[in-house]
Image (cartoon, rainbow over all chains, first blue to last red; front, top):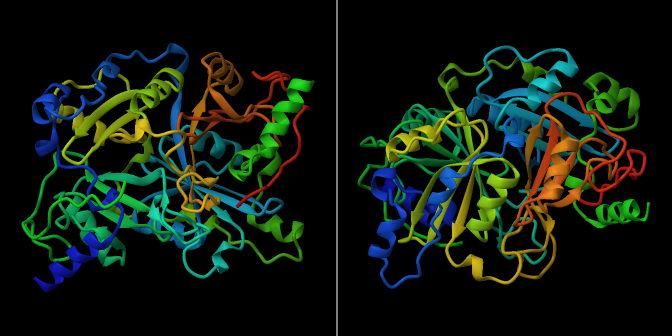
Length: 247
Length: 247
């Protein structure tokens, strides 16, 4: 119980709403545009995105692919170990640019076979793999003390005055067959949690931190389910309500 | 020529190395670990990521999926129009959380059929679609003057002292069959470029800005090719060299 309380306190002390809670389980939050006015009669009507479901994809874009998200990392070896060994990504391609002082490493999920060995084939393979994470290493950053990059979530890292910054980037998110099982494994491998599945107001999802402090949301591939106790010993009824500490 | 010079100047004046140039064409940059020591005999050896190609994916992670990257947006309607109508994403799922003051919109490429209408089916469909972009709207942000969120690339937005922040997030990136054609279309639709395909030091790739200023890299799905003139009238030999203004 003490342990659960400490975990909870730790979670609540963090100032980013991105992980104190940012998405509720669908069964308790599913809401269409119409009920909004019922539930919030005095609030202004929300923007209704429903018509966008019917927006046809422009034919010129039919083969476009969301291929990458790039984040800068302090130490590539540490990050690659975390992404590959803990999160199950695979290295698809890396490139060093010594003339410009940086290197990039593309990691991905969902690879069905070996990565091509030929450099040109590998480039094409990478550029047609959806949802790669591009880890960028600026050479020398690994020698810095402490965190180097602002994580986007009301973080003061990298700001001139040490004040928190209103960041746009929130997190990366992976989906897994079983959030609780995945988190047990993450914990056994020494991962740092911002939120275990049963802590905080949202049950059944978690946030782990990558080595630079970027948040990785862990969500189920099916319905939001809960288990009585999570990897940190937090009971499903042991978490607290939603705390929105920061936008 | 004046136009090309202005575009070039505009590009070079920007302080983020993420788009002044951050990745060269593979044919001119492909480099393995060994040549590094030859080319930079006096520099410390770079970290060699090659062994990670052989890192086996842990079996427990075989079904993990990089499903989302979350960024906050000032105005959801403006962002959805841009992502759907310009970049060719489709809305997969949205959820409003009026009790917490925010909404989220998942958009994706690569959908092969209609998005399920049933709410639970849609949730599952979304959670098993790789590389979604989750646009988060904090209600009320649309009324702010100017940009709201720090974009990650040496941006001062959202910092307490107005100074640039060393951000971790760099960009999203899409791959397309033809970068030049895609950019002609983006330009016709009024998109803002940080780098057209022929400007800057890297030929054949581009960066457009989304409505919040986040960078979207545009890369080819095949080899890096160039065309004589790009959407901004910049000749392929009209760009300048690499300028690394910021880490």
